[in-house]
Image 1 (cartoon, rainbow, N blue to C red):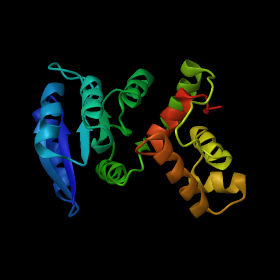
Image 2 (image 1 turned 135 degrees about the vertical axis):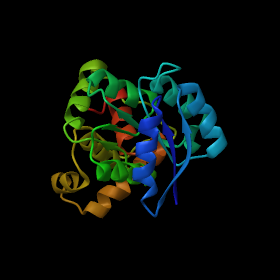
Image 3 (image 1 turned 180 degrees about the vertical axis):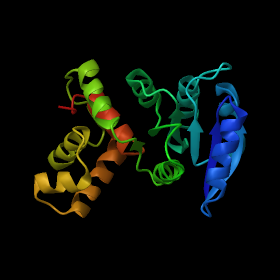
Image 4 (image 1 turned 90 degrees about the vertical axis):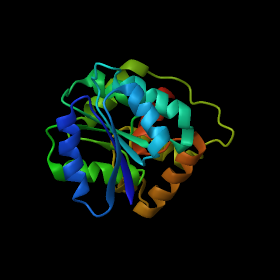
Length: 216
């Protein structure tokens, strides 16, 4: 069962999302919060797998709450799905910088929300179609080039190439085609790379790549 925490300053939005998610046999809404600080406390209390997080809330914004949750729980932090009405690059960028694993708009279809929750729970990460390329380009513009970091267990040449291609927006199938290998091989390389660099999902791996000069 996937445990979900709903965070939004509007009770009607939380109720609507709750109805959508409660219809799914594998999803359970374990709590709600109306402000960022309430969300941080609710994560401690309810131990969700996924947090559906609003961005703008009068009592404390979702980006600050996401940063606090990730900082406090580290590798055990729930995946944060930012759900907002604002399709703005700065919000997307800020959410991912804060440690969010996915981003969808509030006007998405119910099945898109359900799919996003499931994907984040599975460690896949998600950016709604049309947002991914803008975010990648923004990372490249803001970060520029930087030397690859020193890791206790360095990435192999093939792991580095897989992460680089992922950061360019390629799917596993596209990476496999580019490297002339099987998709399962790509997944294996990517999984080992993520373990080494300490990222939870594909989206945060893209963030890491652009922070560390592997986004080109």
